[in-house]
Image 1 (cartoon, rainbow, N blue to C red):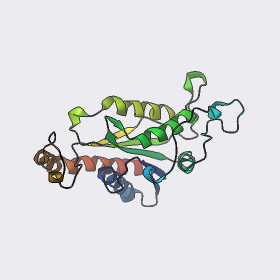
Image 2 (image 1 turned 60 degrees about the horizontal axis):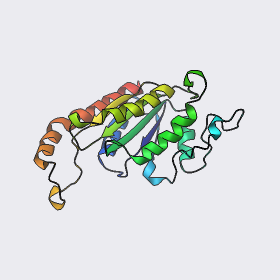
Image 3 (image 1 turned 30 degrees about the vertical axis):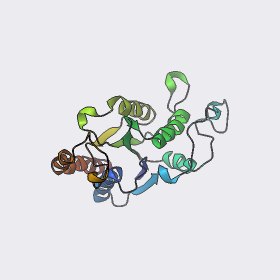
Image 4 (image 1 turned 90 degrees about the vertical axis):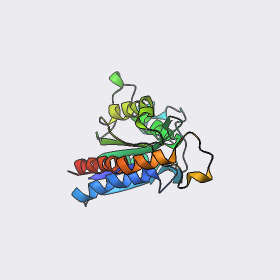
Length: 211
C-alpha cells in the first residue's frame, strides 16, 4: 500500500502534525510495510494554477497533467499511483491554508477534465482522507470550505473521510499574547476531555485504511 500525505501547515510539529501522526500510527499498526510518504508544502517552492490550460490541450503531451515544473511536480507525480491520499490543513480565516489551496488547484484542475460529465482523469481512484485542525469549537467549523475541498477530491478520486481537531491551542503560553476572545482554561478543559478522542478517530481511520 502506498500512502501520500500532504501537510499544509507551516508548523512541522503543531496540531496538524499531531493529527497526522495519529493516522500514521493506525496504518503502521496494521500494515507496517505500507509505503508512507509525507510532503510538507511549507518546505516547497511552488505556485498555484497559472490558467495556462496546457492540461486541456487536444492531443497535448500534458493532457490531464499539470505542465508547471516546480517543487510540487514530484508531489503530483507521486499521487498518480497512490492508494491513499491524505490532505491535512489547519483552518485559517475559515478556510484551508493558501498552500493547500494552491496544491488543490494544480491537482484537481488538471485531473478534472472538460469531457462529458467532467470525467475524472485520475489513473487510480485513491482513498481520500481529509484532516483539519482549528482553534475554534466544532459549532464554528467552516463546513462549507471543507465540503468544497472534499467535493472536488471526491469527484476525482473517492468520497473523503474527514477527521477534525477542534478548539486547539495556538500558543504554548497564552499569557504572552494579546488574546481576549479565547479562554485558555476552557481550551485546557476541552483538551483534557476531547483531544484523545479526536486523535483516536484518526488512529482508527488509519487502521481501517491499512486493512
